[in-house]
Length: 148
Picture 1: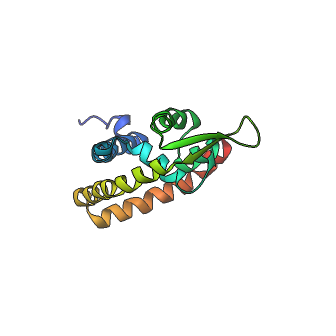
Picture 2: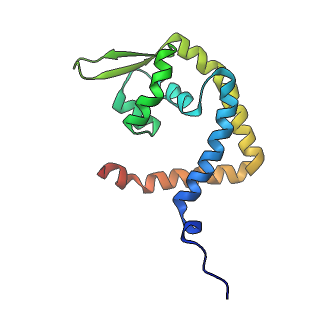
Picture 3: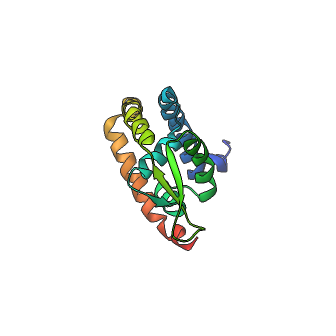
């Protein structure tokens, strides 16, 4: 009599994390050529949209504040981002620097190469379907984000 599948093998979160880790490694390998990680690149791209508070940037990057703060340290230390105080002295504002803009310009072709590798490995149509499904999942989970 075959044994039932392990509970872990049915875990959606495990599967999402496993795939995300592997995909992140691919992007990280490409971006390493200019000394960035995927998280750092993602933060720079969100900062490119204008000066943001720490909370706004965390939300835009899909990170909690502690993860964002940890990832900001090298970006600030390397002069890719600048920190300022808002009208309220407790408010931290994050702004992209010209050096950060140049890093984004260098990173875009590397990110595009990683995107192309993902599509080549998985297929362009399945990748598009996956992106749509992930967007729908993100939207379906909105009540959990709003309750937090």
